[in-house]
Length: 478
Image (cartoon, rainbow, N blue to C red):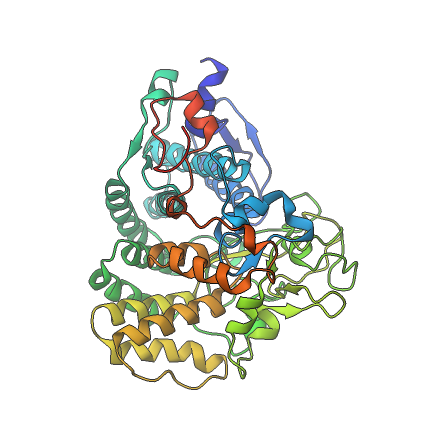
């Protein structure tokens, strides 16, 4: 096969990448290229492949905040993150390197999942473990596609291993309705095959509740609120998850995979380059070793004054969620505190799904189905932990705004804000109002270009150059 086959649709090196065997789930080695003809014959081969799929999520989430927080009103480009000021100001073009990386990394992870799903039936292994591994692969693939569809709209839907150049060229953009229908099928199957909990070295894998929560999120995206209610209620009623009394402990590196975490991407910080760099990249620019160690703090996810002001006066979450650095006045999050020995050696996991998110999604689904009185209850569970009074019942429209506000402050810096704005159809309104309010206050806010087209990212220039049959989103240069 010609080497350029793997460049098509951003699928570079994603058909052959697997990982070597490892002792347990939390001891993952870097991906390496192996001969597939001599692979996938034993249970240990599949275990290594599944672990490799998980390991690939580290690269995906390293820069996820750039596309999921920075374009929003939560964070801004400043000092150490000037490289993506166009993402912040929404002046992006189709040659944006972060959108290209998002596309490439997404399809790389998807390919690993596809290989697992293609090969696993022929491998002799226990049925329950085979179902589990299938469920893990279906969840991860669904997670990638849900993000892709929200960020880019119609995208190629690839559900099997790509083996030839001609086959790679054949995948064109599919309607989001088709993608979402596939994700519904896959996540239902994933939930059926996944165990409710894990123990020992397997802690950190995707459990049943995470698949159900992601299915609930899919239903919110597709406005199927009636379907979302029982799925999210099942997660709540399982009794496995709960809110921690101390908001700060949710994110502590000494309390990883706690009761509030449904699924987080695991970073090891073991000296082998398998750690995270969030603690260093999010610490205030110029703070030296005052807040973190291991490298030069870059302030790469700096908070906005608008987010800081969004917290109510008595909200005890704010000192953890967003704090002001006294020396410079810069706003930063303390959710990712650590003192690693070097960059990329932090022990901070990335929280993909946690219980507070489930409660707020459940509240939203109930409210949108007209059960406003019931919707207030899970909302107030989150507010109670924050030391806030119960939200009043002023009707569906008012509660809709209250829930979205609560999602913003509870989940800030965790990669939810931009997709929430898109999902609720409020991005243009919110960001245009933000621009008007913070001209001359926020970092170059006067340069913001909040265009109608920005509800979708452009299909990367490189992908369309490799395959001109890929169409472009409206409003972007070809």
